[in-house]
Image 1 (cartoon, rainbow, N blue to C red):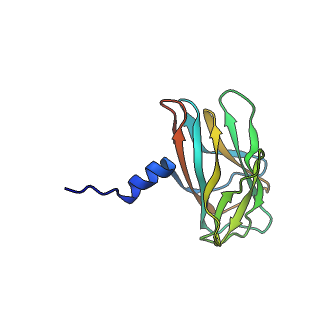
Image 2 (cartoon, one colour):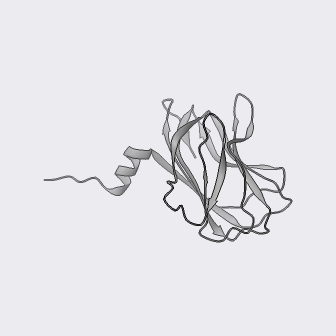
Length: 159
């Protein structure tokens, strides 16, 4: 009897495990909020995509994505430098744009127009947290975040 791979199996083989955080509201200005927790060791992040699920307030609010490792130095824009998301409508995608050796910019796009939401250069994250930091006093709205990863260390996971 033939055995066929299901879509979820192809995703697991190609990009690793997926973790989803729904309806995350950005924190107040200058504050950081945890998006994902990396436990048990380091992981290789193969994709990181935000999807606006409730319209974002204002026109100037920006967010950056970074890391705060259990051991080591926090880098509030270590994954993506600040990108303006104020006024982003429902359905807008957010993803880090890779840059050689540096944190890329956070790309805000209603459509990818041929760009892939999957990172051309996956990146490592040590145990700790992946966080979001904002630039305005109050930002309302919500973002669904999708992350795929492969454990670098045996037993490492993301939640």
